[in-house]
Amino acid sequence: MPNNRMHFWTLMIKIIFLSLTTVGILGNFSVFHYYLVCYGDCKLKTADLIHLHLMASNTLIILSKGVPHTMAVFGLKQFLNDIQCRLIFYIERVGRSVSIGSTCFLSVFQAITISQKESCCKDQKFKAAKYIGCSISLLWVLYILLHFIFLVNPLIKRSSNNVTGKQDFGHCSIAGRDGINKSLYAALVVCPEICFSWLMVWSSGSMIVILYRHKQRVHHIRSTHGSSRTSPESRATQNILALVSTFLAFYTVSAILQGCVALLSNPNWWLVNINHITFLCFPCFGPFILINHYSIVSRLSLVWMRNINSLILK
Picture (cartoon, rainbow, N blue to C red):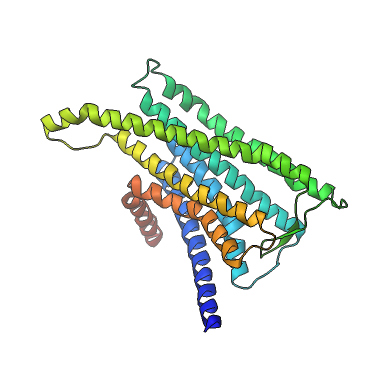
């Protein structure tokens, strides 16, 4: 009976990993397809540009984390060598860091956008929009270079005995970081991620306060005119709040679980797999939050139908 139960839960883990990876890839590529095909040569809005970078980083996470772990749970163990394993881990780390930074930029930009009416500085939004593209590009370059240092450094010091043992990821294993690398990683990667998270919390709180004040201010106008329609600006803010709240919830749970796995010398099978699943949740579900809240399902369907019809006519 215990064996049957274990087989059942092992099968469930396989189904969850396969479903998350498949759904995540389809969702992210659907949003990419929507923006690139529907907008064409038109200039993207600032928020849409951030969405594209966010989907790109999420796709990197799914391809480097979801696909190898899905293959591992289906029985394909240790199929990557040390260099390949480090490269996959490098891509995952870059994707994670850029995902956190992009979500923070999105939240802060929207907070500036809706607060400009409350502020004496009316051109804040335009200043933010002007520099946001450059800031995200700089974010990519910074994290690509930063994580590249952590990728190359262990290979250079391969002969050193200052390692904490092997880290087993299922699909591959690599030597752990030494004490100096851990300290540098915490200072250069973990601390900025925590700062990004606090900025998201602050900007989200600001948006909630501004939306509440705006709702109170226009309540009597709605009552007079009998209209309950929400302004496009308020809808966009609610959409971004939903996206940021989902990100913060999954990121917090994932960080706690990852800390537990790191602290335990021999972590439980369940803990390890739930940690991986939680890590994949936002990259996989994020695009569907955008699809749902921005009402692009119908337009996306029209684009797909148009492309299918053009292929049939050819």
